[in-house]
Image 1 (cartoon, rainbow over the protein chains, first blue to last red):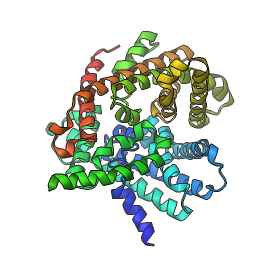
Image 2 (image 1 turned 90 degrees about the horizontal axis):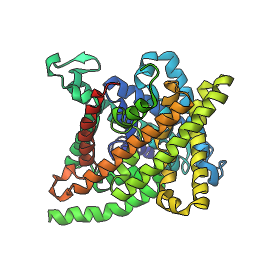
Image 3 (image 1 turned 60 degrees about the vertical axis):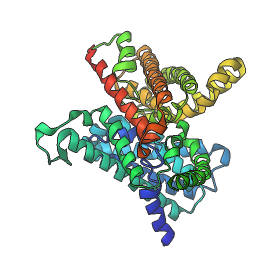
Image 4 (image 1 turned 120 degrees about the vertical axis):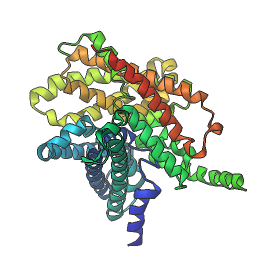
Length: 237
Length: 194
């Protein structure tokens, strides 16, 4: 039981995919114009992630090692297509708002990254929990950023007006605001000392290689985490 | 934008709707690779190369296979597989035929498979119902926009001295703040109403 909860905590805080691992930044920046969009995108990704982790984990002994990435991509792409059709049918307004970013869940680094780093080595149950944790971490980050951008940019949160209209700084719901708000959220997290391994942050976007990054990346951060900790200790002393 | 001319498509893809700063595609490699100027230029070249070819292939596939068969809904799966296969083929071809180009672009080619910008452009071309020529042009223009953005960011980053920054801002946050300022600058291009 404990390890299941540990998975959730890991996804939500310790290895929050967006704020710590810097994965899945594209949809995070793009759809966080409103808190509601953030939740919609987060939950769609969560659904795909949980199912893909489950399927990949179940099939981890069947899929030959050499062709595992194409196999994962086909599984994820199928799930994304199903999700897209469901959203189109039942939530047309969300479909309009998210647009091209729904099919682009396929290339969301988080999903292939988790498949590679976690689901193909662990049991289905644990992989599902990992998917839920990571998905929730993604959702929380997107919703938080969406709420901040919506509040500063339009004076509302979830459509509820909190600030008078004259306070709106529209720059925050325009593209530059996305970079700015995420930069500040990450800076705040660094400042309050959640171990974001800031030195590796940018590198842990894996030099842009999402699918192949996860394993190499994990070992790299593990290697670098210790010297970084020493460095910090040395400075304080 | 009825019947946009090809030049308009290039300008719009490269500057007005810059793929990175305005549409947020390809952020991973934008933040990851822009550490070094040289690498950024190589990656930019590889992206121009792959994105142009991928747009061409995706457009042909959509117009002559998916559309007539009524398999519009399969486009995500087909496009991503085609792009992945295409990158592999390009890589093998370059290795054999022009080792010099392969040496310059080689290690960046596999990165491009998961670069959402390539898939994004293919999907956008379908959404805007561009024909073959327009798709290729749009792919090229978008890739040029990507290259401009990543090379500019690499230039800015080479001037940032992290020691001068408050600790929490070091690393990712300062890069994203730089990107935000670039994005503000690029918003100026939206004045170029076409």
